[in-house]
Image 1 (cartoon, rainbow, N blue to C red):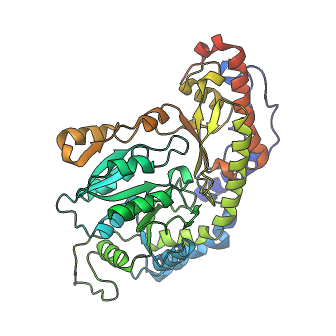
Image 2: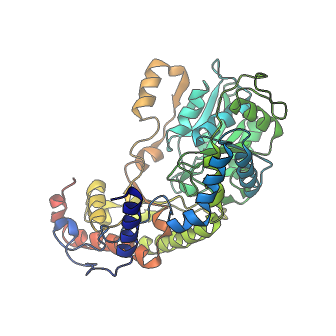
Image 3: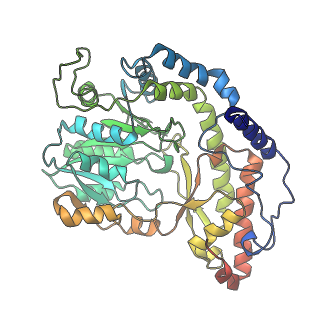
Length: 449
């Protein structure tokens, strides 16, 4: 069978099956993992994937955008589409400057290098980071030969704790604070900005998970000296891989631009002239064209995520076994990258977290384990601390240590589903919690594959 025809038939089948009525769902009684029926058969009714792709979307703009890039032959320089997207995203974040890059990690390491005017050829001091985050929060400064100090997070939001930050500062050694907007919720940028000003530190936003989020003082991306976003495939706005640096500081932008363009100076680029030490961190026009296409629907999709996010928080809170994180009252808009919850085994018959997840997943609910260890517990960080203790400082982080034992998440892609689909998640959790609360001895029968 022709490859294209097979793709069309597969897509049509999925679209048809995905809209079929439920086949005798079992919302009560024995859990599927113990032989009962499931709430949702994901083979028939799969959850949305990371891409909202369709032939209509291809014919309606994405294909034409790719074709224009291909036919012009300008797939990299002069970065026309890249600059267009960077400008649009910067304006969206209330920033003067945006620099499109291949990855979010590139954006974070260039933001640090440019803000601190550090070439990375020798030890450059220490950066405070939360001990609960994706590993790039730590590896980006380490790549620039900046040490990291792992600090604890707030117990109710799991964002960087300003009190712990203030206590961790070492005058003459600490140079910057990296505030991670965890899971889409802005960190306490009001207090962190005050601490940074008082101690003469740079404040960098790791906004990889917080597209479109707004704090009381403004949009994420504009709240520190510079910010880094990611457009990796799991993000709410994505192009497979990609990132962007935003800033309102012209000096930071000019340094970052030179760093990303092999040391060339913006506005005076010549092929063989390199004014500063720099690298090639230029993405392709294909990435930019895809983001420009998807950005048109971004706010619409975020509104849907926000509606389902709020509904799930309200309904799951009443079940007890999954406790949502607190959303700070100063958050004007949550990024809704994922809905993170604390698992409470005491409300589920003492079922341990891995067996609980196995049970709800068999019911068809897209609930997964979140970070399973802190950054300082990562094998890579432990090895580095043994070899180069100068670069790693770990403060006591009891909140983060506890969080990795109990946090689970519902991905942002699921938040784009219809309300009746979201009700399946609630039904799955309720069914599992009710059964094991009433039949505690059955917990040992749950097998984890």
